[in-house]
Image 1 (tube, rainbow, N blue to C red):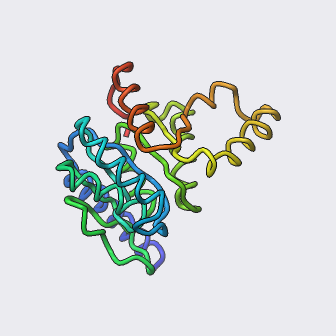
Image 2 (cartoon, one colour; image 1 turned 90 degrees about the vertical axis):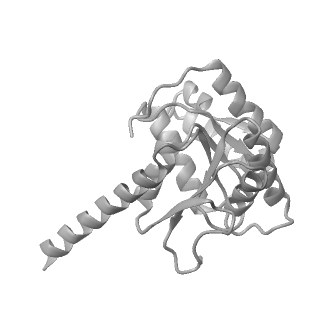
Length: 216
């Protein structure tokens, strides 16, 4: 029974990848936006994420999010209302009710790891707004793959100097001091405070770097 269950699970995983690749094949360049699902409309970071979605569209980038509420909704909304591509890569969760209404094209996933592959495969940059454990997971997976050279070192931008300051202080004064990371690892990301600055970092990177295909 266990072996049969494992076989069906493998088929389901394969189906998720196939559906995602078919759905997103041919997407224009997009930027992944990560951040809290709990931040409501009208809050500072919701407004900044919405502004990022609006501004990045003027540079011919679409937006990819987890398709949920909060920062995800704000980014999708900014892109969609500005005429850009608004993509969602959802996850089945008991406390979220499907895609937000601003997603034009999206897929739902059962597995977190298949979802992450979609972000990494179809993104030309990563912007991380304040968030919780899920946001930290997405941030550190993206950094790890860039550090190891497994994924293209597309720009990784953290938005919110006060929010991320404590974490970056720990990285520098604990990990780096104890030689658990190298000095060059600190160059894998940039820290900014506004949507405008995040857009500038993304655009600046793509002007100055020619990119090749991702390994995914």
